[in-house]
Length: 386
Ligand SMILES: [Zn+2]
Image (cartoon, rainbow, N blue to C red; front, top):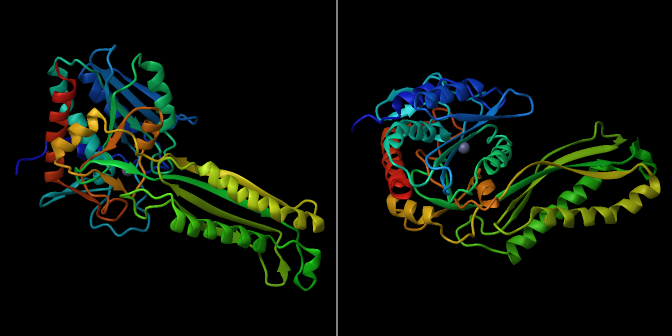
């Protein structure tokens, strides 16, 4: 097997510890300098702290609809994980490259960068846009700002976006959306022997959580259902709860975090509104004892679902090039939903397996990088070359 052209670039990218809590600017500056050598100007879109940035770079004709190649630059933490070698040093053992982000998703970014010198030699009839984001792993926080800027920059909306999350080089054209919230219940403390004088915030939270569980059961029985998703319906789940301090005190406060994983077309705000309506039925009895009693709601994070749109030119070609007979409905979320929400047809296809992502000894196979390089080369030739 020949060495992937992206090998040296992957080694560079893995060397930047871009765990989401850190700045990604060293990596972004590395990419900017690499692009500058190819006479491609990059624009940075900083986060509010100035410690992180998205990168946008375009080349080719300005007035035609282009192809977006998109990836996130951040990686998940390695804390507490047992790695065989330094996670931020890309190490080749046999035909695999090990390191944090090799699969998710610096392998894809390295492949794109490795092909840029070729693409600079082409006469393009449609532009290529490189879109690198920050903070994908902590709730797709970077990509909305990137998309705002992209829309301002481009006279013509892109005709498609390829998000290179690890799919073992098969095309994914759908995934559920996710919306996470925190609910804070305020009651009133009292001696537990005099619980008629208090409002038990833990018990109120328990009722709300039971309602979420009931909603999940109803969705699992009545749908809506969509083929290919596992499970085939929207889900509701509570993931975290805190409240109470002692057995003999009626707790005044309880806080819990919950999420909806929504099929394309299902609005998480409507599910939230249904839960809030139920909560509103509990308030009068709470306030009869304690006027300060409250149930407060706040969003934690969200990303939209992907899927349900007609098959795009990009999807059809990507399926043909990768031999994907039936595109996958992915079990993980990506930034592709954000692109689709803005009317840019998006698919997911990239090197490496999601099964090794976020784990110790994450790797990408050399064969996957080679396959991605070949795929990208053909994709750009067929979609954008004159
Ligand atoms: Zn990822």
